[in-house]
Length: 247
Image (cartoon, rainbow, N blue to C red; front, side, top):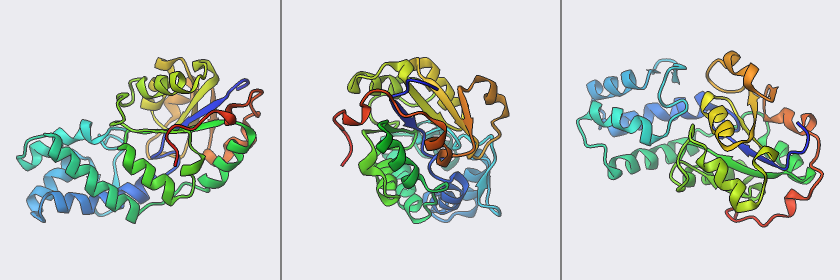
């Protein structure tokens, strides 16, 4: 993993504990979307592959790697509502509030990102969550000001597994694609990295098994906390690049 200048991090399952954050939040969001209709809640749980007694998703859940643009139509069908922009915005708004209320980091991401930034890496989030939700969570966890960019599914670059948000970072901030690495826990992260010509670092901290991704990864670590000691500092001065999105 020589010559890296930029690290693009997935959020859920990489920086944020998926089940402890979204498993708890999802139950509350489903009840609100269903207006506390028990039958409607059950339909949402079924299409979401959600285990309410355990407050977690099965690895097959469309919510594990997808955005509301992906699973929203399933929810709309279950509720008998149109899957329009207002419906998706309602999902995002409710998940933003419940996600913040249940926000649980994986390890100590602010400490790890501070070390990586000090070493000279440019840092960004590339997530299938909404951009504003990702910003709010990054701020709550104390590392928003370390980020050069936050790209969500609604930032205008597409969503993973498409490579748009990764390629956009390279173009906007002047990084060679092969000098960037996407850090994540899913096949969507791997596909986004490879599609943009970037490298892929697999973390084992997500909600789904990742054994089938190990052979395709350039590096495998248990969590983001391991990255500062696993990666050599960049030879250039990536940290001097102007931040466009960070507060």
